[in-house]
Image (cartoon, rainbow, N blue to C red; front, side, top):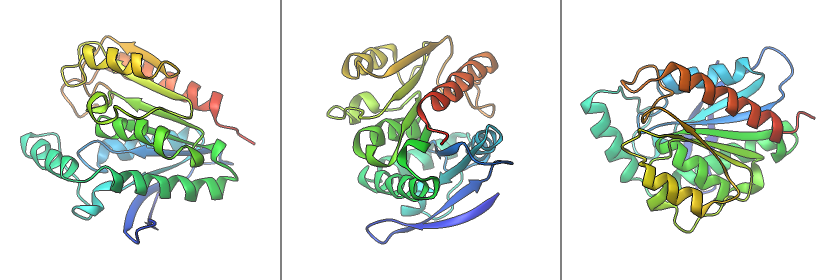
Length: 229
């Protein structure tokens, strides 16, 4: 594990958590945070992506608001995370993700070896960059993408996009899911009998079976669409 620094086109400098695989990388994966910042859960996802053979990088998107912001899943964390996320114009984190993807594409030898996986707020951003930064990515995966139905009304993915939805999610509701499926007919949608945040074992809605199924589908999707060279 290493900490790294990147500089966006607007000269904003931000940190990132990076993990290397044990052997030759099969590609790279950007792990996109929830509203809770790059915390233990996001680092654990990056660690798992590295264990699967990918260089994994989780950029600190809230460095534009408060550097190193890392929150828990209690009421205070939810309040602070929502304030940070919804008071940060979307163009900022999208630019930071574009910067991260471009850096990894240069390192890996092409955008077709770089993917992204995002959760909740990060799921929405994973879908956003599939529309707004496709030149630097080969595929993207969005878990329960909060507010995507509302914020991404004009966005269309230009690269393969996988979306995981929880059928008992009260934040990304079934109606939101139907809206996204109608809007993005070329994306792949997978439904799970689970609620919001089902992938995170630190959250009340964690569902081990759904998390395991979704992770395997995610790895299969990345393996299918990212060129191992």
